[in-house]
Amino acid sequence: MSLVMMKGTYTQQGWQGVAEEGFQSREDTIRAQVQAMGGEFIGLYFSTNADWDWMVIADGSDVDLIAQKLQIMASGAYGWVTADVVVTAATADSQTAPVHRTPGQ
View 1 (spheres, rainbow, N blue to C red):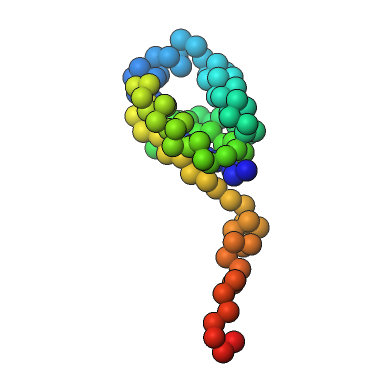
View 2 (view 1 turned 30 degrees about the vertical axis):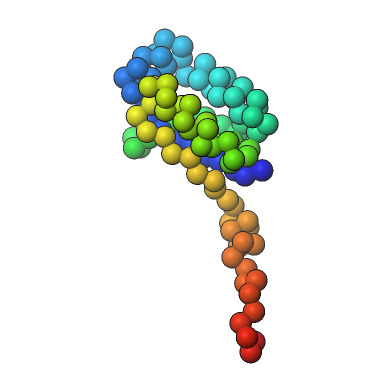
């Protein structure tokens, strides 16, 4: 499983939906979607001063990111969405350890 961070902005349509349903409703909906994909929901965060309106962090398969992003963007409620796999320092260190031996070494 990979730790996934998705961030994005709402369009006017999206903000209207949030205003009608509330922020907790968004969290409940996203939690259910992540769990239905076999992932673990970690959190949904909102920002007032960043270039993004919302951020989701989940532990799950990054294989589904493209399909999920296409469905999200097709709704018309979002201006832009990014999806990235993020790793801890320990994971990054384990991935950058030398695995190739140069001839003569």
